Length: 250
Ligand SMILES: C[S@@+](CC[C@H](N)C(=O)[O-])C[C@H]1O[C@@H](n2cnc3c(N)ncnc32)[C@H](O)[C@@H]1O
Image (cartoon, rainbow, N blue to C red):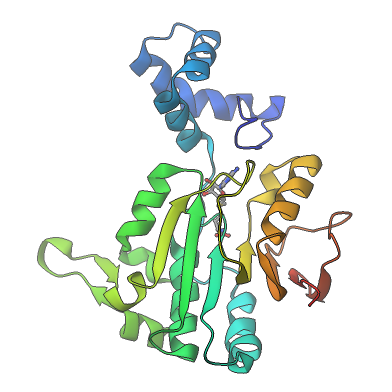
């Protein structure tokens, strides 16, 4: 079933799959996993439920902060003004990565001349990402100055939450994109983040996904992967800049 997402579910993950899907079996009246498997083969809506339940969506603001420091200190100050700077967070989960990027872009480039696309396969996390609305516990990791400048603290019945400011939300867009399928037509990007998703792919899927995603990077653009991931054997002509940061040759 997970051929669609490209996520490998080894036999050792059986308990996890059972745990996450058992409620859907009940809700759909399927007596067995075999029956459920047949159902999602034919029913697209139920298939999306299964995908949403089976993907692992852990994320947080300014995760792996060295990447954001690199953008802020090295890359963005050298960006020539006049051409919009385009960033793609290609497995953005609930949006924290996208808004962290937006905060750094707004700080360094100002209120316009840049945009961030966030995409994911899971529709539930995309809805959360679009809302830009999070619990206060999520503020950990957000630099104090960014928190003050770009986040609105909830009051009254919104107490205990915050909303990412409209000026950042207006420059972000969220779309459902399956990395394990043909890409929709997109303009090339200056920077692509593909972090903490390849760990779920087989080596072959990983190679295909990297090729597809890097195809949308502008020559000279930068490609960021998670600190615990590697492009061993699949770096596809990318030049290493720092561990987990690569450049597409100009
Ligand atoms: C662990 S999160 C990583 C979020 C963020 N990039 C970070 O590093 O914090 C992995 C995300 O990849 C998404 N994902 C898994 N397979 C995918 C696929 N084939 N296409 C697009 N997104 C996928 C999951 O839904 C999940 O939200």
